[in-house]
Image 1 (cartoon, rainbow, N blue to C red):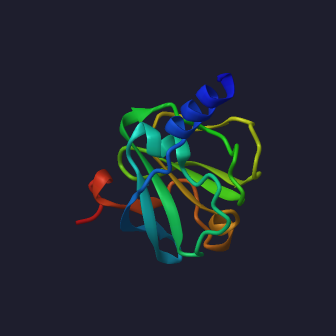
Image 2: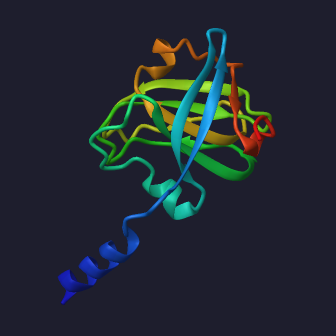
Length: 146
């Protein structure tokens, strides 16, 4: 009976989330870099994130949006692919980049200052596209896109 109760709680807690889709661009020294993104806007979506994904397209990512700027901490538990995490301020500027986060790690990855959003991309994307702290994410939440 105890095993059944635990199974029901787990199934309820970890129901597969669905995500909205949108597009954004990162304005870099080399030009605008476009991405198709899934949107994580609810607590449940943000908790699931990219867990259990086996791949992510080179021009894809997940944008975690928060109602207001705040300290943000993430981890890679149950995440199977390495990720770059771009912490973004209210104005769309990239505040901090955590590159090549290790799959499965429970180490905390934190913003260095309050962030309004986090953009997760394939590990190595920031280096490949020369995305830097101070570059701007063009997206309507930040007032930087239509």
